[in-house]
Amino acid sequence: MLDRLKALQDRPWTVALLLAVVTQTLFLIHLDQPSVIMFDEIHYLPAAQALLDLSGPRNVEHPMFGKELIAAGMALLGDNPFGWRIASTLAGTATVLGVFAFLWLFTRRMRVALVGAVLTLLSQTVYVQARTGMLDVFLGMLLVWALVFFLWAMQGSGKAVWWRWIAASVLMGLVTAVKWAGVPYIVLATLAFLVIRIRDARLAKKPILSALSGKDQRHWAGLPAIPAILALGVVSVVTYFVTFLPAFLYTTDPLTSLSGLFAQQIHMWQMQTQILPHHTYQSSWWSWPLMLRPIWYFYEWDRGAQRGVLLIGNPLIMWGGLVAVLACYWAWFKDKAIKPLAMALLWTGSLAIYVVIPKSIGFYYYYYPSSIFLCMVLPVAFLHFDRGRNRGYEEWFTAIALLVFGYFYPVLSGAPLASSQGFTHWMWMGSWR
Image 1 (cartoon, rainbow, N blue to C red):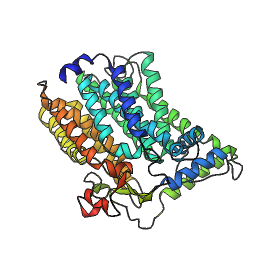
Image 2: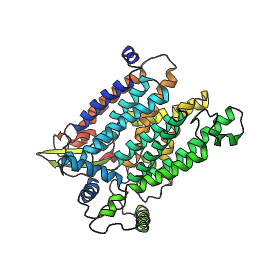
Image 3: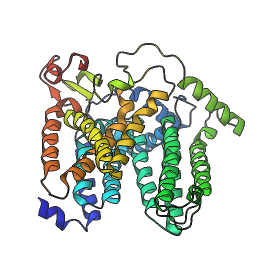
Image 4: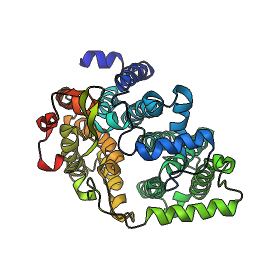
């Protein structure tokens, strides 16, 4: 296995293509299970249909881009389970490829990139969201690719840095145009840029203010700080508002002016911050890493069989990932290892967002981006602690994760179950019911 990975070291595009084929095929198998609308699809599918018909605003609690992507799938394949979910499958595949691209740029190790991508595929959260017509899969995909372009810009120089930075800014705007949960990531990206620049200045024994210059920079060479931050803000905001153009074409209650567009943002804020009634599946942010309250997206009789779709992470990856986060922090404390620290901070920051976001209740699917980042933390932790000895522990970990995925597959995919109580086989905790 190790020899094969070495042979593929210089062929990332070939590996990416194979990953795309395998991932998309897995997502498409029995995509019409269940054959009816499940969980929060009830909010987003009618909103997507309203966009196709331009009949009027629906689901105004969230911005429009995610629903526009669902609508594109429905326009392509029709108002049926494949049309509802095809865009989500493509976003899920793009997420797996984004993790591969990020880790390849981050470490230049095929082994690390491939393990991270496969763990993302086996994480179970990506699989379920990629087969559901909801918004979070688009948020995760766009966020991962924004990070890819930020990292690519970080390693570039000359004109390439600027266009990569602008591309990342566009993607950040689109993340926010799916859900407002994308806004804190723009702030975190700005802070990370400044911290890295200041650290570079200190290591080079230069004045701190030299971090603002674009000249003689170790990272983002040729990119002055203040214009870069302004570009990130302006481009992301403009991109966000462009996605509202269809709202000006509605036949009922269309937007007619910029003031109306801004008034809609205030209305969205009011809806986002309203006090909501208790929900069966609500949970607190601290419980998400422990996976205490997964969500049954579907559990009904469908097409002659009892079927279920459970949003639950792969326990080996979700809980093992927490150990990897702690290990990455230890790597920084003991060895001053920057890359493990960066991965640990990425996961920590993604969870900390929900400590401060003013939402009255939370759900496990809010943890979706963090679950992806755990799949990036794990191979980086393995790389650091393996110290070049190629012991293959990450391959054994991935193989066991595959077995766990196979074990949970019936309640991830909506496969037929033995009876109405068939779900109990997978209920390791009482809170999972």
